[in-house]
Length: 423
Length: 126
Ligand SMILES: [Fe+2]
Image 1 (cartoon, rainbow over the protein chains, first blue to last red):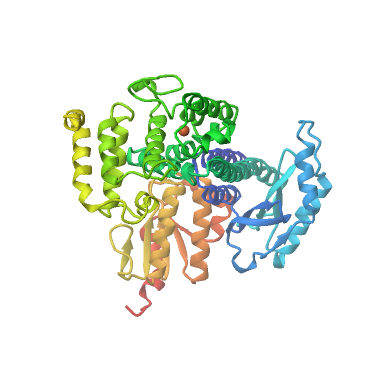
Image 2 (cartoon, rainbow over the protein chains, first blue to last red; image 1 turned 45 degrees about the horizontal axis):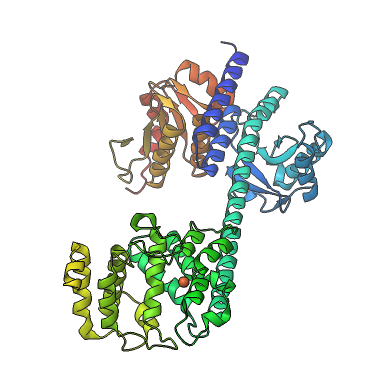
């Protein structure tokens, strides 16, 4: 076989080797190292490097080097403005093939990079251009054979370089996509924080309207969160139910302040006015694009009851979304455990009795059971911080009531709470 | 004369001339194995390298580059390298790429070791 033929075959094989390395190596730096090996092995060169262009600083970053040791220049800034690199990318957006970097500009880049290496260590610098944009360079020392690079050798470097350039460019695009995704994620988190702040502000506004129930919405949010977590909901869902708790009474904003603040039991007409608030809340919340599911529905149904005697729609059992059942219990629990102008709050034992009596009627038994379990864990010091107990105030949860709480949980779990409670 | 055979003698066990077998195909994977073996032998005090290409059918571009790297490291340590039993086809390739200017070629492992006789007979403190 003549030498020329052997050379061409070896070059073809090198192109195939390169394609394989670029396609199969997932680690970028490893891929570039292999690509450099291919170029060096294709031509029998001992020293070489592949660098990518850092667009921000218009300089080179050596990704893979071989044989240069100390003679590798630390910093290679490009004789181009950063705007020049960007402009090159833009001008090709329409596929017109108008290369912003002219041949003479590329030649100047190659010449200047060559000069940065000491003592003629570099014989060939080949720019890697993808769609008119400079993405990197290949730098090569002399051939081991001592023979100078001929036109065919240079063409082989350019051919290999085209593939390596695409590899570098793909990697850069991927990093760009990752960076944007990360930016979007952060933006989304910021928006969520703003949303939560807004929700809290609304909760404060709702509670301001009712001078007797200060902090009610916030407590309902907290209790709902605790119940949902006890029921094994995901953190995302738990965040959502907290928001529903904060906003469940937002419909009260459209109810006459006199009715809300009446220091006596209200009459039937006032009562029906007050009972508008879940549906009104639904209408207020519906047009908003909430980052959590079903917030408007949880506000609408927080006064529904499993026995069908709730409002506004008189839904029964499974017709009521579980989230609304949680908010409902949290709401009632806070109403029972805070003083009102016309009554003092109930004792803890009375609350347990109410839970037993109303599980299956006003409240969902599984939700009551979950709340009781969370309470018991706090009472036994199994969960910290003790959020429910802190909200209820010191000494409210009496030690002697705990056996009744445990009994209720076990009766709810076995479905015998009704018989035991009403017997 | 002591002889260090790849895979049969652990590195560090001494020996003035190390013999490393290239295997049937010198690509990235096997090239890196050869490189590792050679560097370990040099670290262990070997003063010359024989790379035996008996049965080697193909050396790809990455393999060539890795061999060039091994030669460079050996050169820096003053350790001569001999390629033994290289097929005709591969010799031509090595000639074309200039490797034959950097290493001596021998028809067989025995011939390579004979070439390096002076290195083997020089005491190296073991
Ligand atoms: Fe309400």
